[in-house]
Length: 560
Image 1 (cartoon, rainbow, N blue to C red):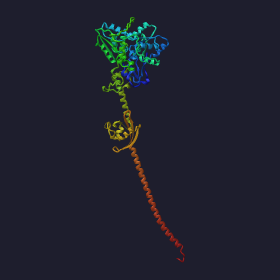
Image 2 (cartoon, rainbow, N blue to C red):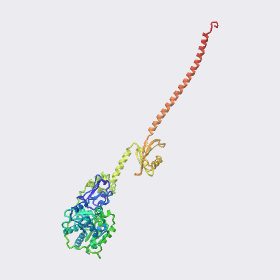
Image 3 (cartoon, rainbow, N blue to C red):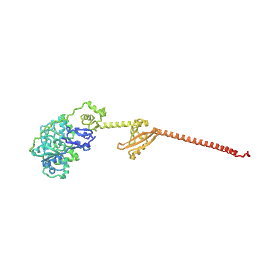
Image 4 (tube, rainbow, N blue to C red):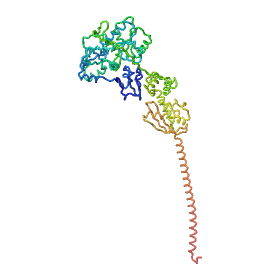
């Protein structure tokens, strides 16, 4: 049965759940995460740390509502931490649950009383014991630390103990646990359990709001008075309820790292004659996911818990005479992974660009503590090589550099302080310098920085300009594109010197041709003038000659 599910639409390239999952029971495939149910201990950490809120538990509210609609007799067993979450006494909360349709409600603290009594009995003979109240601790031991099973108290959890008690009293009723612990859903899903459905506090809160039921009644004197076993949800709460054996050391540890280290110490024999109360959540149950989501601080929650519990000096406790047998045996569910060989690990590391120990940054960005641990996860099918962000970044930068370096156009990037960050070979060829002599230098050493300042100030996506660099005797067409997100200014330069020179030669030829045409025209005009002058002189002489000839012809004989 699936307890946790992922909204895949919101889950991509994050790995935060992998980073915080204490047992790495998360598989990443196609950049999205999914729960490996067989390895999960249902601590709920991933539901808290997910920035996209893509992890959510599957709610039993619809099924419980359907059971009520069918007229089934439902009895709630309510975790003692309700007093901190809902800020009311049990009688007030019981009346609210009856409004929702429950037949009745009882405190899971009754089961806690049965459990702590068994703990006291076990401690009478000494030895080292780990409390079995926290289902996530129990699951962690069964799956990952089976050598510690001999130290795990063979006692049902308070929820299961109370469920067995209520089932003996109300055999025809269906039992629903209400509390802050996601792991209880997994516990209820196991075969042979007495509690069939589990509702988290926030699920009940949403149900009450949807039905318009006021749950801000505060405290009403129900006549129950303080009960010491209501201390169970707080750190050290179990120990606070127990009668102590002076021959036994009583310890309380919370939080995964402390729990894991203490279990290792117990297995190694470094702790003897100890009864260790273990809580997977820091601060106990009141530090778990439900309380973290509601932004309830442990200190304030603990005060509310103590107010409902009283103290050992004046507080009373439950008096249960019909106690059932709550003993049990926790069996190994060991998670077995075949350890990959060193050659396989090295091969994966090389594929991730890690060719030496210096390349193994162990930055944890992929979610794993070390690069080798990540490589093992890849071989186990739990991780992808692309999860290594430094490698992907280096690969992307290398690819981008290759693309830029292969471009025929000159490309350079400048930071916001107008210093050169990157320059490709085409640009170096223009300026006749090596990259190491230009990177880090002010852009004004090769180009007019005013153009870059103007491009930034304009707010335009890009700006174009033409320039001539007399120091390098080159003509350039430049395109400047500021990228404020990356805080870089990209400049693409096109060397148009040959084009400019070609145009200049063509213009010179045109000018020479024009001058030659002008000269020819001038020569032609001069020749025309000379010819005209000669023709004029000849015409005059001819006119005189013809006139003389005419006069001669016209003379009379006598005149002759």
